[in-house]
Length: 295
Length: 289
Image 1 (tube, rainbow over the protein chains, first blue to last red):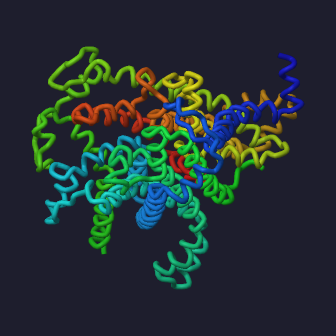
Image 2 (cartoon, rainbow over the protein chains, first blue to last red):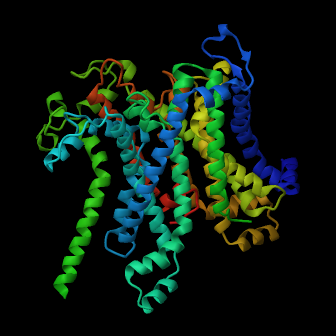
Image 3 (cartoon, chains in turn cyan, red):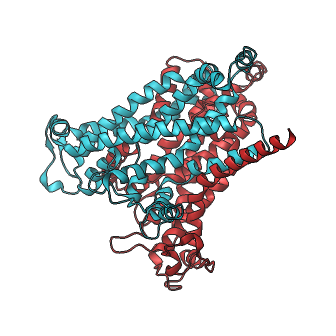
């Protein structure tokens, strides 16, 4: 006991930070190095009889030069990310500006808006899967009610891709709304009052005063969303399983298929490494924007 | 004048009502479907106008210890009680481990000076961004060799990746907001860093700590990919169990929807508990609500 006390007083940083660091190192860096090692081999974990063959950069070369499905899933992911984030930002900004003023019941509205983004993604996928059904799905029922034709949501490749995007917009627009609402309420009031005194219209106030001040908040929220969207898996798995064909296959789902349907362990390790690098690159941009407290 | 203001307010609240209906309808709809006992109601082409008898049969069947309770065919192997326990065990363990390791580290980052602190903090933030699929591949292989597939330690370890970095990052923010003088005063009074951590910093950040714990529970509860890959029949968590009602041959609609809705009920309760901290937590402390 006395010895531990002295360690913590001499090197408190070691005592406080080291345990977390050691554990985190063991469960992130070690598996990553192992993935890197596996990615230079041709091997299947379920078919070890075919051997564990060193193949150098073959997996990477094959991935980039020969695998059309990889490029398709990369394009899908980028498209989903771009469209979903654009719509979510616009919807979020619009509704956040609407809710920015004080009104009765604001707290309740804010709490209710939290619900979609906290809901288990797998259950969100299941719900929309049921709602998108052609004959008895409630989405088509509502379309018919307002005089529109039924839509074949889950069969046509282009429509299905946008159906997936719509689910993400539904689930994550509230994140943008609440994030921007917090951002707006943190803004200083003087510049807006000054603009009002100068006779700026409300559009001019928004365009030239509020929006520039919100830029950093928007950047943070967009980066967080893009990292989440690049990992998108649960919704694709439950609604379409990447289909029809490969129309809605995302990077994560493509890797999942390679790793756990076909058990191409070496090959899927190479893909995992590439996805890892993409995400870490985006994360570095995010990190530059946020400032940790306490330094 | 007064009338036009009333009209403006009315329009404002109508718009808010429409927004709320849009964002809450799918959740309501899942609950609604899960209460329909008859397949005729379930597959109605006029679902909004069907009057049906509300029934909790599917919920009862999911948790009753008997097989073939009703017309629904939930066999014993699909009962939800053990899966519920699994979800709780995994969520609680990963939360406790992450808090036990993460809160002291966060205190260190907020109050101590040491070399490489900033890099280390950024390393922890970066681990939060790791895509689960990149980790699921090596963990599946390692756990296969170590015999840890379908064991609690196997799945809990991956949830610690999700939660430990979250705890460190968010708690560093909470500790950093405490007045520095309080920590310094307790050190001057002769307390060791451990004592000032346990007796000053921790009690003062209790609301933050509690909300962080609830967030960890939610993240672990909602995880699907790690659980899908690394658990089996004995450690399966709720989200994976729900997908089990959709097989290659059939989809058991009643059980599927009831189990799905039951999975998200705890999330609503958790969300109510931490609604003050939602924005802060979901943006990793980058935006303070």
